[in-house]
Image (cartoon, rainbow, N blue to C red; front, side, top):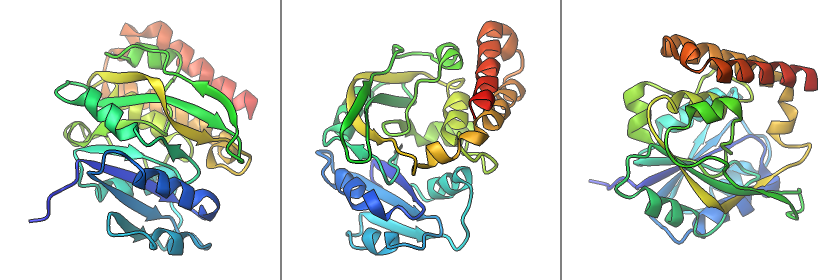
Length: 257
């Protein structure tokens, strides 16, 4: 029988040819080698398919004829994951070579269900804007994350069994903040681990999905907060101040848009 890899890396792509080779190559450069890439091509019309399929069978390519919301695309990709841990790398971002090794060393034998680290925020040309280091200590983080969400989408590793056992999946309806929804709901189920070191780069430009989807941020935020209350009765009373702050931030996103 084929042995499952320890880590499944989800790459969701829609016309990502510009930085795609650089992103994939940063995974192949990892010092830790027991991984697979689940490459979900979300109906791309550029050369993304040719670039992705130029790699070996550690990259498993899936093509969607329809262009789905990012929430649904990530969910469909997640369904193909065979690893014990699941990571994410979008097609314009990068991992440092020791990224997986550093996190798995910290997770080994622990009770953590998610681990994330710091990122470099970079311009389209790769030059540094700033470095962002996790502000919270390892442990139960729901309270802190409600006040100020701190988890990037470049470095998290999630225990897949924890997701499956809790019935938490990416939400098909969410356009822009699918990671906020998943991570916040998961923060009610177990402890998170943070590493105070930079392990990846997040590319910021007007072309990125993050920038183009800002108009959905407040709607997605409110949907997640309402879901947290439904799934965890009494939670909004225990963290009344934190929930109020989280709803206010959703209103801020609407004003910002």
